[in-house]
Length: 503
Ligand SMILES: [Zn+2]
Image (tube, rainbow, N blue to C red; front, side):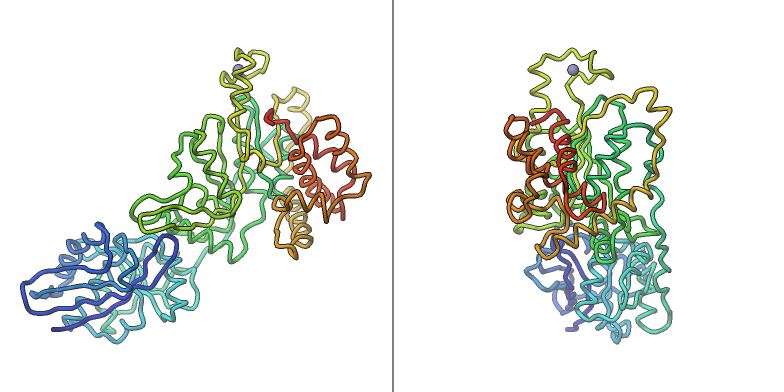
């Protein structure tokens, strides 16, 4: 009877954990069993680990082999434990030196020929390994750049199981992680490309400054998508911790670019309107898949033609919008994923969606019902509604587009003013401030409140609409560099209340 031990790390939904992999060989009927809540993909590791060991020039014990994964009560999924299992078995067979193995975390899927394939979730797993006190990690070369994002842990990138064995014996040095290229992603298109649409551009700037959700309505081809895609370019870049947080989510989803894995710009995620609730919120079986709301964490979730979306999917957005995270029911309990997003909705004004409103053939009822699908609690969270119209010829000639960099400068200044004001209260942006506070502790001077009171008296705005206007007026003041909103800010903010054509 012999025992070999190695360490791996895996994810339980969004939570990474170091896993001890112990291989025990004993006399009895030769066989290979894996214990410790392994899923189907992991149990298939038997079919990979055995040939990988043999094809790397090592012996697979002709004994009863039991590999136990601990903690036993953590559900384990996917092929990421392959490498640690192979190392543990080879150690049990005493074919390599075990000295380094005790302080190393091994990550990687094995091919039948002993090749080590990249796996998901390397970044969060290594952050956890470092926290647990591990000095070094062996990772697939394909994940080396991502692994290199974690400082203070020695990274060894390997292509084959044979290399790992020679490294354990001290006969081979493995490459560390390649140097990171941290230049900003150039792929976000620039606002300078957008001609005309001054009100919508302004709305986007205000949205970015106050982190408000936006609804844009207008005929097809007017540039709703073009503008929405430019929103990340006027948002502040992600700071250190935020950047790692976002990168970890995309690591788990398997959507990181291999060569330049650190995400420093806010993500832009645009699922189709036929998206399922699972794809939107996350979940599913196997490796916990983050949904669109989590992939858009600290960035933009853009839903084009949102009036075509199912009521179920639209309703499902409420909880993440309210809480900044999403709870997904899974076979083994409830998983929580981060989901602090800026929502941009776009819709045609009616089902027939002509280029010019006068050509609409829809009945009044059909028109009202179309955007009416969006009303209710979800719309209460949308502070800005902007109606886009075809630009006049003069606009095309005279309005030149300002660059994203110029707009971003104003956005960053406004954001920091808001952070200074609200941080003591636990909010980070104007969009998070509740109406009761805007009407209470932070009530504006009577002169500034006058436009709201007039609109309320005349029934031109609902109480909720009035709260939204007050919230926006703070962002308008921040963009002006002013201490407090004045009457004109509030009056302007009221104009954004229902231009989308929904209540
Ligand atoms: Zn129509």
